[in-house]
Length: 74
Image (cartoon, rainbow, N blue to C red):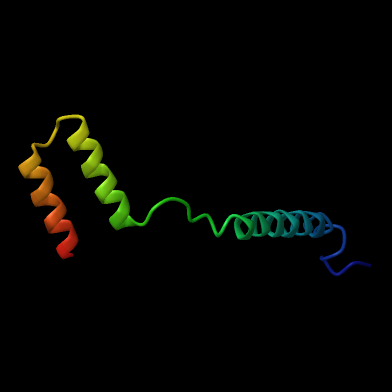
């Protein structure tokens, strides 16, 4: 006679094995790409955004220079 863990929970081991394999594949893929960190740092990206806005004419030269100065201070 089973103690309640035989037939009723027999499906859980394949599910756990599949989840473990999926987690391993996901972890290895993230490790291979540098942990998902791509692109410039926050400071570099902020400067790029200012350059893009200046190029589109959203900022005057004075506004651009002032914001770059403030960005460099922090």
